[in-house]
Length: 427
Image (cartoon, rainbow, N blue to C red; front, top):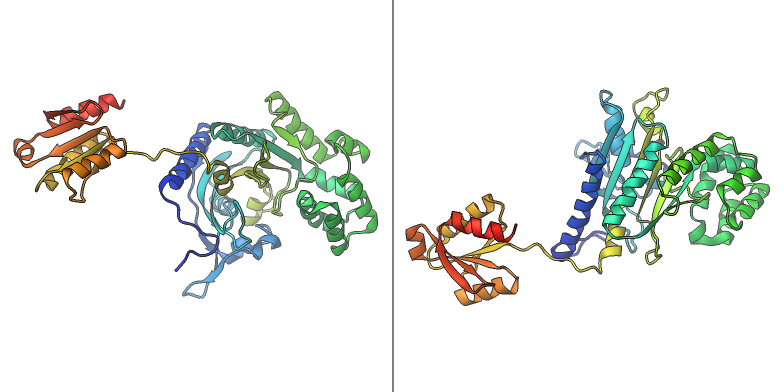
């Protein structure tokens, strides 16, 4: 018996660290006034496979299944489509609508470092804001979250509309632009030679391939240089790039955020700004998160393509973040007190523990029937300062014996007095 490839169980120190990371992210999301959502893991296959969802590139990685009613279903491969579905099917939602979701998604793709088949995503999305302030706020959330996690980052960003205009000016046909974008997105992984070969395999004209190659090897391909080269300074995509850049500069994010003219991200539904987060110290090569603007999905899901639902989001990759943090020491949460029954006093020990817990004191109860010496040694090895002993005499008198392991002292007192002592010492 073994786990399915690409799936893992988490417990102990590793789970404690995962919980800490999730708590940090959740706190930042809520500080920015994003509300929590839980969407369905199991969805109709038609929804997940629709042309306006993940596109053809995600179909081969989607887990598909059939229920007893012979319905075609699928496990969600991201949190974006389920979010879009909720907005589309609930037209009464007040806009702008901000939500975050932390949940598992599933992809039957290659397994490698930081990439699993069952993994946790942490998404933040806002629908109802047309301007670059939506993307700027999401970028601020990312910067704050990684600052709290003590991970230095660089955020690379681009605009798909601008990239499409650039490719069109370079001679790429309209119906080939998306395919070329997905190839360009891999340039750092595959190199210029493989890039040219893949473009030829896709039937891109030699003229366009030549122009793209020149762009790909250009030193410092800045937005100003590229837009000037093809006379795109006043195009719609260029105006969007300039608006966001000005906002980022005013927010002091110019050094953290770097414009990358070939970034497009893998999914087909992005319509404008896209961004991806990387380790600034380059110790970890894969992305730590990413997202972008996708204005078309919700309207199409609602069957109303004439209605605009301007939407932007960002996703944090839990598994990649954990790869970055796995060497960091983490302190497992420990009980503030341990209750040890002596003799036939388990009921009284459980009752005393329940009262401590009701007062917010994390408490363990010795249930192993070990000798007192061993039970005390175990508590000491875990760093538990307070041990509560409940013997037959204490149980009969309605009191307990509080042992301070640090001061090496014992005092008879009521449970309420013990709560006062423990609570005071531990804030």
